Length: 425
Image (cartoon, rainbow, N blue to C red; front, side, top):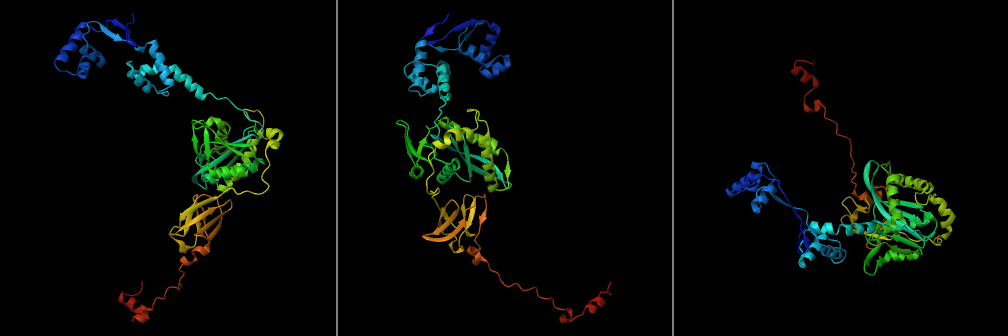
């Protein structure tokens, strides 16, 4: 029979499991000062059995073995209410709140009581309703990264992926960094690749895009530079909810597809070779049968989405506005995205500003332009203008080694030495 004790129900069962002589031996050894571990080892019984008969006045020959404790129905209902409310899904907090109201229970007991609620919450979090957008309505963007061997060196490559939500056409561009300028340059390159601009661009909450957001109101504060970029291209920025990457699941799948199918474990002779490979691979991705639409992305794009995109701006728009502050190294170089660019050696240990454009890198000392280089994307490359380090070379005249003086000028001849050692051998 179950006997109710307050808010807990503790059923018990009495079963004969230990002989009376063994119980007597346990209590006798305990009376002699033996510890439970030593008694258990001596009598070959479980340590918990020894504890039970030492602590409780249990009749010899009978072991009271309590079964699992459980909450009453009223306490279970209270635990589930707290779990979905004030405890915010934390069983430890539920146990503490119940104890504050005089309902003592272990954390494991509470976990069992709220298990069904926890399972329902997990299912709701995982379950996703697929939302299909109209042609030209949305492009999803995201960055991924992968270690790729380039010229025999393992390099971390950052991959911007963009997917048109309706047709599933995919664009990818590789970078050596993931900053605000890489986001803008990659998005603009996607617009040019697709030949038009979608009405909205959905991204995540990367710091390069989003400064802050109010979770209660759902208000997002985008970075001013990103807002200006979207305004120039006549598109609206959107951001998915925090920790809800499934909101942009199309591009999440696209990033995995690029890393697993487009790059896999391939190696490349140069970064340019990697870019050329991705260009060819994108055409293959557009021609595959998509697993969700069961159509080729390029077919859906040409049939329904191409004309739904807004036209590209009439005039070219700047994609990068990156300005970095650097200190000139002892060898008259500055480091930008693993690439080293030379500056006049007179500026060694001084600070300069570097303006990184789409095709050029300009270096300023104050307001003076001191160096202009063609931008390279090859990792760990060195771009040198010989005039910048010409003053470091000290090319002195290097005449040939002086002729050794003849032995005759030293007062002896070769024959004299031969005679001294007994003749030439």
